[in-house]
Length: 193
View 1 (tube, rainbow, N blue to C red):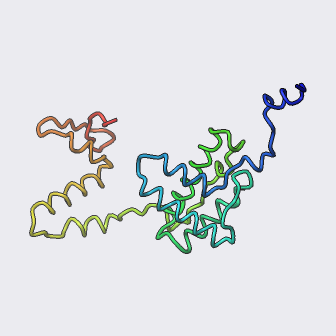
View 2 (cartoon, one colour):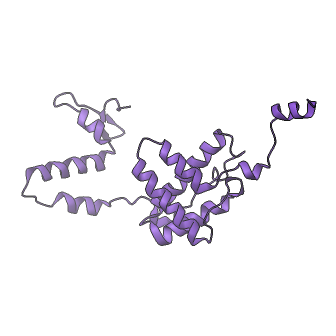
View 3 (cartoon, one colour):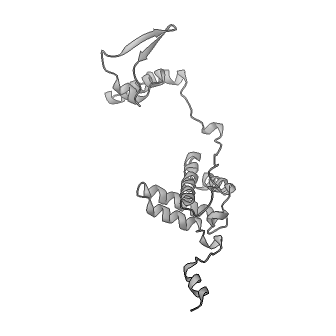
């Protein structure tokens, strides 16, 4: 029998890379099915991705054709049409980034095009802080329920001291160490790690 037939049986036939690369939504759905934690959240974000691609005029896209610009296009679509705030839109794009990272680790693509995705939040999306006036107003509110008063008092202590709630909960009556430093009183203790 001819040698070429024998060799062909053992030599792996190379197919063009474009045939081996899966589509984004297909790969995303397989990834969601593999994930055992938070599957509902992943499914919601998968659906958002599918709607964004449809809105952008694409039913599907091969993983190796994805560019960073697609991350921002999906993000813009989600901010305008789907998500209530920019953080949720960014989280959805970061989920796609995780899917692409999985594809890189699985050898489906060479690099993660979404790895550089970093949406800039506008100034009004940055955290807001209560003013001294607002804290004083809050401290003057009377509640009928003692639980609410206690919660408000703890909240005010945390605001004024900058202490974490978990650190505050560790404080014990009679065991609080207060020191004087630069004319101010400081609560000493170890932080919860």
